[in-house]
Amino acid sequence: MTKKRALVTGGSGEIGAAICERLAADGYAVIVHAHRHSESAKQVAEKITAGGGLATVATFDIVDGVVTGQALQVLLADGPIQVVVNNAGIHDDAPMAGMTAAQWTKVVDLSLNGFFHVTQPLLLPMIGTRWGRIVSISSLAGVTGNRGQTNYAAAKAGLHGASKSLAIELASRGITVNVVAPGLIESSATRQSFKLEQVDAMVPMKRAGTPEEVAALVSFLVSEQAGYITGQVIGINGGMA
Image (cartoon, rainbow, N blue to C red; front, side):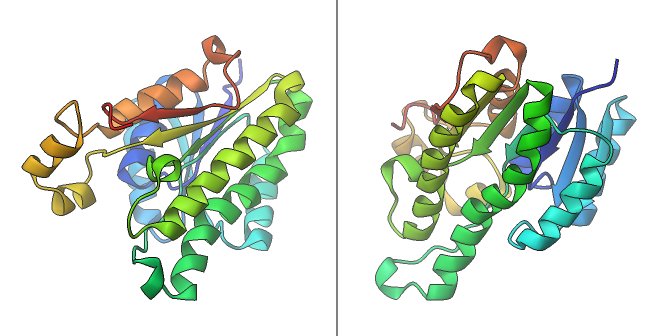
């Protein structure tokens, strides 16, 4: 039996890599996407294949709709992609009074326009199979807002509205569309940004989450068992909201 294919954008980052590894362990043929960090994506794919899983690497800029469309047509030549995890995103924080237009546009382009550029070309082939799972990785900032992140919060909140609407459009086709909104998750960036006492004060569970915990939630949402869950924004934040 041919394995279902799963595309994870931003698959070279810490959360993206954990999602790729988990989906490969679940039996999917994983496409690890990257743009600037192709070598890291290659390492993720090699780790998966060394463990007996199936993984390939795809490198393209999801901000560029034409380039993304061309890359996806190449991937679709091998058959439909039935699981899409829109994980790629970027921070460029500043109070809005001091934020440049470039800071605003860069963040919105990657998270929100990237979602459209990647997801839209995959929909008709996915609909043809009568089964699919679309999960977008958002942030607690997209739910509650966050100081210095009007651009990031706007992009992520936009994902929520887009996903809820798309979920309604695809509900009768056996395709679910959901959003995962992590809070504070362990990474090299968060370890540099937050002291232990800050984490203790911010998070009711008194710890940061792990990329593997986010990946476990994604794993469930793309499973058969989650077939009646769609149009939801699911927080994973240790009780922060």
